[in-house]
Length: 336
Ligand code: HEC
Ligand code: HEC
Ligand code: HEC
Ligand code: HEC
Ligand code: HEC
Ligand code: HEC
Image 1 (cartoon, helix red, strand yellow):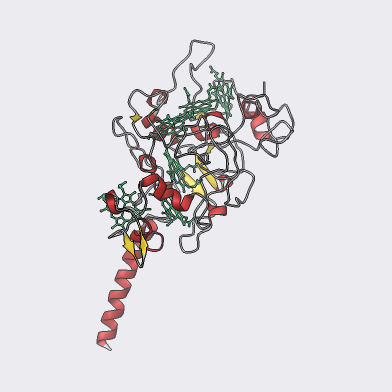
Image 2: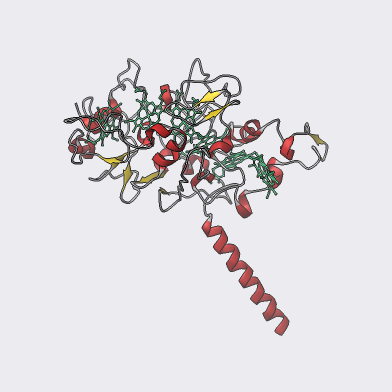
């Protein structure tokens, strides 16, 4: 009896520690217990039960980091969110194989199918050399790598984002679930649910989402809003500023109404024949992604997708194109 009680006691302690650790990193795949297997990415001798790989630095299973990550994230592994579209840099497309729950598609967007060979004007480039626009500090000879933005071994941040994407620029920016962003349906590491978990509508941004600081670690010239001469206020489009605040150049009534019409900018789809797109993303006091309210803010992810989109500059709508939707996002907040 005594022996059993001791064993049970130890189990409980270990169990509690494990639980505390899992909660601290809750929701992030490739971290801890169920999500992360060293053997998903590493091979010890470039051979395992007759499967053979070329020997590589860091004992990776593929010729480099991007091909390694894309071996699952290109749509071939249904449990992993597909971040590669069927298009090319010459003919961009938004079709991916993950059946996202809503028409908003994936939160981060996607790279075009020729990501290993061609730079694109539709988002971040994984081939180089690259120099970040609006940056005084960031260049890479070989294109961006996944690990410029994500840590393959995990971090406490949302999506395993690194806190300091540009070590040449000062600052560290945490983006944590519950504090900076929310997920209505959490990532389920035991039973992956990519179509629900990585859907744009599933992710809410707090007003203090910290993406501005994070993105401008590389795009450092946008770190502060450049002031304009009165009666204008800004010399570049601001971020993290409230819609309908005291600057008076935006239209809170239209933003709150969400009325679907050509003039308001609100519609049901991007890229259909009718003017208007679904409400763009915004920061809010409670991280809601559905209920608009006074105090909502404009942020980098209101207008841009982190990986890319089918539109120039990874924008969420076809801005510089002669289509019915070209004015839509601007109209939602400005109603001109
Ligand atoms: C062996 C397959 C596989 C490989 C290789 C792989 N992933 Fe994943 N990854 C997955 C799966 C499966 C999920 C989704 C789990 C879920 O939704 O529950 C995932 C989820 C993710 C997420 C979302 C994490 C979260 O919970 O928010 C990120 C970010 C990610 N992977 C990045 C990477 C990067 C970077 C690499 C390369 C270093 C990589 N992955 C390599 C299978 C893989
Ligand atoms: C999702 C893919 C992925 C998984 C899973 C993964 N690694 Fe890695 N690992 C990488 C990549 C990519 C690198 C290359 C360099 C880098 O970005 O850190 C790397 C580098 C390393 C390195 C050398 C560099 C360093 O940071 O010390 C070690 C050691 C390592 N991994 C150990 C592990 C162990 C142990 C596990 C399991 C607990 C593991 N890895 C799981 C992708 C992965
Ligand atoms: C690790 C550094 C780094 C981070 C972090 C980063 N970027 Fe970039 N960005 C670059 C580089 C390098 C380029 C130029 C090459 C390219 O297009 O990928 C670029 C290009 C861009 C472009 C132009 C794309 C095009 O096709 O013309 C946009 C828009 C952009 N970034 C927005 C963002 C946003 C929004 C964020 C935050 C979600 C962000 N960036 C975070 C490095 C970064
Ligand atoms: C310039 C920075 C940057 C680079 C480079 C980058 N990511 Fe991401 N990624 C992000 C950000 C930021 C998010 C979260 C954005 C959001 O939720 O809107 C994200 C989200 C994801 C997700 C979650 C799925 C989704 O659509 O939200 C996966 C999986 C992922 N990245 C994998 C990768 C892999 C694999 C690579 C390399 C091939 C890569 N990322 C390169 C910034 C980057
Ligand atoms: C109100 C919408 C909006 C917001 C908010 C916004 N952008 Fe942009 N961004 C655009 C548009 C539109 C373009 C395309 C260029 C143009 O039309 O002026 C662009 C272009 C860019 C470029 C490419 C510039 C070039 O020279 O190619 C980068 C980099 C960029 N944005 C980063 C960011 C970052 C980082 C944030 C957050 C601090 C941000 N943007 C916030 C709308 C926005
Ligand atoms: C999510 C909401 C949102 C979107 C989308 C948006 N804006 Fe804004 N915009 C704002 C806010 C908030 C301000 C600053 C506060 C104010 O003036 O009320 C602002 C400021 C401006 C200003 C500067 C006014 C000044 O003070 O000098 C201009 C010009 C502008 N936006 C144009 C645009 C254009 C063009 C687009 C589409 C490419 C756009 N905005 C998209 C919310 C948005």
